Amino acid sequence: MKVSRQVLTIVLVAVVVGGFSVYKLFLARTLRPVPVDIRAFGRLKGDPSAPVKVVEYTDFQCPACAHANGVVEKLLSTYPGQISVEHKHFPLSRHEHAFRASVFAECAADQGKFWPFHDVLFKSQDTWEKMLSVDNYYSELAVSMGINGARLTACVNSADAGSRVKKDMQEGVALEVKSTPTFFVNGKRFVGGAFLEQEVERILGKK
Image (cartoon, rainbow, N blue to C red):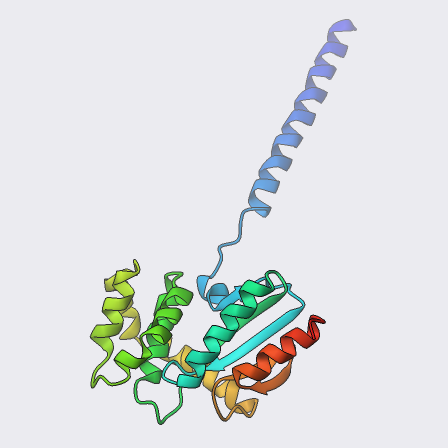
């Protein structure tokens, strides 16, 4: 009788331990980290849960957009954690290099370098806007900041990046965006960096 109880105890322990192991295996599989799509978050700067959410439709060849970029950077540094900014492409037809700039920026986003490339495009705007061809210049800029040149070339020569830019443009048209930069601050539209700063400070109770 004692032997039977010992056997029963061993069996019960084995079942419990085995069940726990199966449970751990189940957790390991179900809680496996979900791969993050760099593109999904690559054009968002700041805290996604911030109380002020800014969506910006911009053109890399637009002087007013370059100026507004300085305003955006000032707001992000002045109010950390309180504002997020999402970039949307809206290259204007009168700016001959703007669409190509957006395509290169999208391909930089694929390698997690959207914002560094975004910033250097604006800073060097006076240089490349006068060029007849910009691809070599954009490529050199990208490689200088650690972007893989072969992957970049393959991306910019594919249709995918261009289609992403066009999707932003279509969204902008649907929202009646007509000039750049156009901002939507918590859904409310503003044109120009000065109005952006005023609205953000109003929402945060700074004015």
